[in-house]
Length: 107
Image (cartoon, rainbow, N blue to C red; front, side):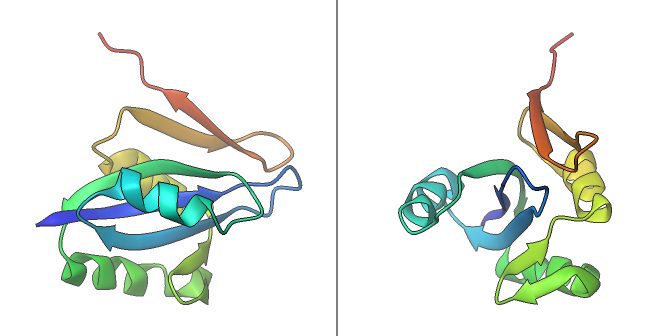
């Protein structure tokens, strides 16, 4: 078993995209994707899962699909990530639609 990851490609115009993929090591996957991306990439979340779980998530967010494993980072996807991720982050959009990522405060 590995992880279904959510890697965001962010820009200051608010045209945020997210790659929803499967990997046994999402942090290494982030590093390999970053070498070919013109924009900064950030791992905004991951959940334990399989390639089948990845396919289910792709189907769930089919209306936001752009190409291959890339999706428009919609409020619905962001809510899903915030509710299900095992990472210690919380994400939202600022008033310009730019993605913001916070570390959760431990209690």
